[in-house]
Amino acid sequence: MARKRKPQRRRYGSVRQLPSGRWQARYPDANGELRAAPETFETKTDAEIWLSQTEADQTRGDWIDPHAGEVNFLDYATKWIDERGLAATTDELYRRLLRLHLEPTLGTLAVNEIGPSRVRTWRAERLTTTGATTVAKSYRLLKAIMETAVDDELIRRNPCRIKGAGKEEADERPIATVEQVFDLADAIGLRWRLMILLGAFASMRPEELAELRRKDVDLDEGTIWVKRAAPELTTGKRVLGDPKSRAGKREIVLPRFVLTDLRQHLEWFAEPGPDGLVFIGERGAPFRRSTFGRKYRKARKKVGLPDYFRFYDLRGTGNTLAADTGAKLKDLMVRAGHSSARAQLIYQHSQKRHQRKIASAMDADVRRQRQEATECEGPTGELATVHLLVARGSTEAPGEAADAAE
Image (cartoon, rainbow, N blue to C red; front, side):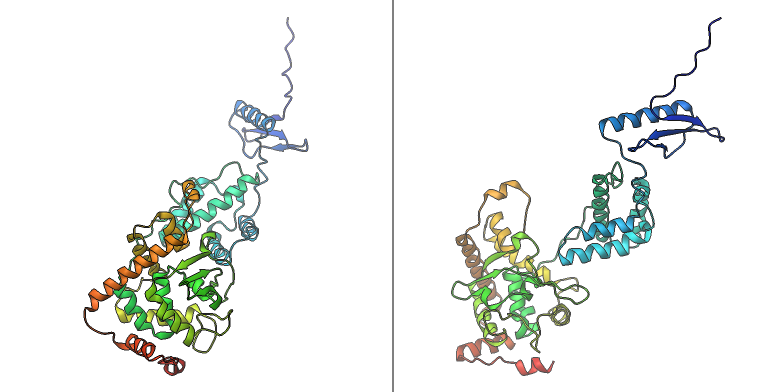
């Protein structure tokens, strides 16, 4: 009678049946110690297949310790933001999204507990409580954090796999007409009139205007250099730094009709000296978003622009006028301070003569529209006062005492 052969001992890991009847697989970790698989199996064969797959992953170098992801998500996400070296406004945005939209649902979980189904549930809940744009921003942040967790070998795959979930479907922004821009400039008052004109016809952002200095203005050339920006955080803190993007550092050629207002503003309102700020408040303090915002909203209401029309939307008027001149895409990007990843644009160059062409065409177009709107009527209101004082060579700012009283 043949002797019964003993079952061959496994050369990798071990399998055993638990009192519950299910099977447990144990595998050697990086230090050679046996560790239990993160789940149990219905049959012995299933457990052995799992062990074989784990051995193959370790051999290929694809294995990830299932316990490595036992890291608190909130701690990991906070460290992720700390290590990014972000611009102040982006850092503030990420921390706000984390605090308000990720932490309440995911903050107590471990990184490896956040799977695709949990991400889908989180997103669906967020869409019922806040806007789609905010949810898209929050989803992109979560996806970026979890992608780093994959790189750090805390998890095998990124659980954020919802197609199109990070795409923002923002409504098309409104564009003011030339006359609406000038009406808004008249309504806001002489001290802030130039800010409206530069926001529209030079496509300058408010944070760029806040840090504009006398030395950045060349009246002879009719140009402005954008070199720095001073965005204001929700805490009220002004943060000095570079413009929004690398393309934000640029030289802007101004339409000639803006130069009269620019000269008068520098003479009446700007700080003295080359480093003097171009825009300061009535009491001599640097530009503050909150103070200007109140004046802007009041002027916007006065001219009948919708409540959702932001200062940033003024850029749409200038960008549209510039595009109507037939300028190349690269020239338009340079003027507005936009960046693009499209490779072919790297080999296109925007020269100053192209910028002058844009400014000259904008100048002619605005003058034509103004002429058609006013026909033979002369200027009225504060604008008429400006023209009259310029004609008389006055150096005193009209309404300054009234502005100071405000």
